[in-house]
Amino acid sequence: MTGKATVVKNAGSHFLLSALPDWAPFPAVLKGKVRLEGSAATNPVAVGDIVTYEADSAPDAEHPATIVSILDRKNHVIRKSTNLSRQSHVIAANVDRAYVVVTLYFPQLKLPFLDRFLVTCEVYGVPATIVLNKTDIFRKEFPEEMADFRRIYSLAGYPILEVSALTGEGIDALREDMSGGDGCRVSLLCGESGVGKSSLVKALDPSLSPKIGNISLSHLQGRHTTSLYEMYPLSGGGFLIDSPGLRSFGLVDLERDRIAVYFPEMLKAASDCRFTPCTHTHEPGCAVKAAVEEGRIAPERYRSYLGMLEEDKKFR
Ligand SMILES: Nc1nc2c(ncn2[C@@H]2O[C@H](COP(=O)(O)OP(=O)(O)O)[C@@H](O)[C@H]2O)c(=O)[nH]1
Ligand SMILES: [Mg+2]
Ligand SMILES: [Zn+2]
Image (cartoon, rainbow, N blue to C red):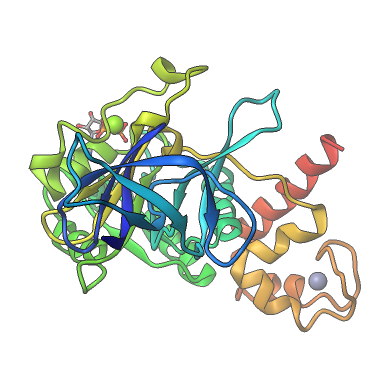
């Protein structure tokens, strides 16, 4: 028999597949290299890949299915193995949405960090939703900062969910969002340490909390960690891919003149710039700078962009 299913666990040479949205994982192996459907290229298999498989009978641990081919990916997320090596590793494929968890304080929000993260999502082609956690603190004590935050990222066009893992505010909305409406959405939950990812998973689906979000990053550094890429079904519908590497995936290498393309609000404005390409710094007739001056682009985001340009210069 043959079939089509999604990779829900990658343990190096062994895999678990499930025909999503049904959750009934069964084992599978790779024999040699696997080709991408309709192409000569071979590819490593990643969690989220939709694959075709062959099996003599219903697959079980003793008679795993054999992965035959990988269907075209709509996107994929990679991670560089180490700073020194140029190797990169595909850690997830076909991700429907990244939920980027942030706080205003405790820990303090660093806008350039969040903006780099959003740029990375844009580069990978993964739509991002911002999850502002710990509103139980901010709503009372920092209402102006909350309004500022909303202004900046609404102008940028990102959906914002305001939640509190502590009080449960917004958790139903987050659960509904993660189901994707049809119960098929595949999500990533990411954000820096201490923002409340583990607490959110616990609030979303208590049965998952022992499995997700408790692996420390330092413990894993310098080790091969393929076995840790795994997808979990959410009780409210949808699937969550978890791996420590994904929670803080770094910035991809970008050409200087490409950076602005990944700020969606700047990309939109840039079509009216007098010059192409335009770095949106010194050029006359720059529509991006005009939009910043007129308040249609948040100056905070523009500053993050300038910061990225500067940093890029340093490394060249
Ligand atoms: N006040 C408040 N504290 C929270 C909330 N969510 C998490 N925390 C606390 O923030 C700290 C870090 O949470 P944790 O879930 O471990 O964050 P992670 O590192 O992103 O997984 C813990 O002390 C949590 O109790 C929240 O919504 N409100
Ligand atoms: Mg955690
Ligand atoms: Zn410009």
